[in-house]
Length: 478
Ligand code: SAM
Ligand code: SF4
Image 1 (tube, helix red, strand yellow):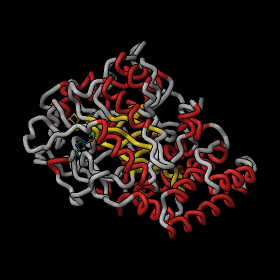
Image 2 (image 1 turned 120 degrees about the vertical axis):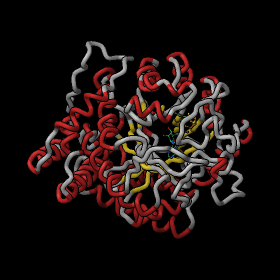
Image 3 (image 1 turned 135 degrees about the vertical axis):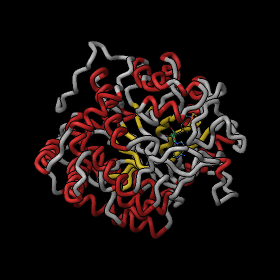
């Protein structure tokens, strides 16, 4: 083990609420931050060790612009050193927006009478998936409101339906879900359907603030949501994603909340979250939060860098909520997954009559409307290697993010080669001619970079497999 989970405060913390707001505030208020302390903490993180809450607070409390720059530089360095240049691509797919909850920030909230409700029929779901496959997507996250119609059986059914759609060379190889918390037996049902990650955001880790935003419905229960991933783990789902909705409460506190949640999962289940998300509040139909915890762009970049350093071996997801310029900036601080070609309106991948967003049909506004191909081209421009890899999940190599981090050479033997193979499929099957040409140059460059490392994959074997992809073979991976 290269990390030392903090000890549980109670002997068995499983299924028990683990957030103590006073404790988190005390840590924030009492932790001093100076140059030396900040540098020591960054060095610990670069040594691939997860930070404690107090060490994270040292970074959070560093307000000197020079130190903030050092934190960002540390995050950049950690990303480069540990993860290399791969960025995994996915798309969200909204399946149904009926909802019995009243979350103040969300366009789907039950009290929003302007919202236009829809649940995709099986046929519409298939059409959406076909359209996504036609764009070259291989990884989806299905999103649902909280409603009796969206039972575990229904969710499992939609996941199976998505896996069953094969259009031309297209297929979805990994289906993640973002859905309301379930009971243990219901988590078992969605696991059996073959989900990848089960993702759920706590929204805010502050219990009092939570009450102010969640005015009705089951989601009002802070603790039931907080322990959702415990129940998922008890059901055997060890691949989970956490997140906080930034803009509901003080961002400093939320960062500690996310780290505490990570500690909790590590301490109780010996596996931290696969991914952390850090959505920022965007405009939504009739949005009126009544508070102002807006996180500005500077603080946003800063918090992403701090999270990268605090949980070095956890994947980080940045979505199309943010505009292209900011995404470009923030990716370098340690993001490992982004969405591309995102559309939020139900049914709009296959039927995009409305190019402009209609907030009454969507959960919130997005600020990056670029197609998947445009996103890929930008990644090329910035020396990233786009990846659609799903190998670990399909080979049962769970905890892959941790392996990337802790198994020497893992990235060079598995992740980078698989990124190239899946990118090659995209180039051959879906890319316009100029992207295809540029993409093969990118692959060549990455191949020769890889060649320098003695612990990398066998380059001749990788070349051979890339040629097989060019010749029409699909789904080859290490
Ligand atoms: N109904 C499920 C639930 O509440 O867990 C699905 C969640 S929702 C479809 C996905 C996430 O979008 C929410 O958990 C929330 O963090 C985020 N979200 C909601 N409203 C938002 C807004 N106005 N701006 C940005 N993100 C928002
Ligand atoms: Fe419903 Fe989720 Fe929106 Fe809350 S965030 S109103 S639970 S869809």
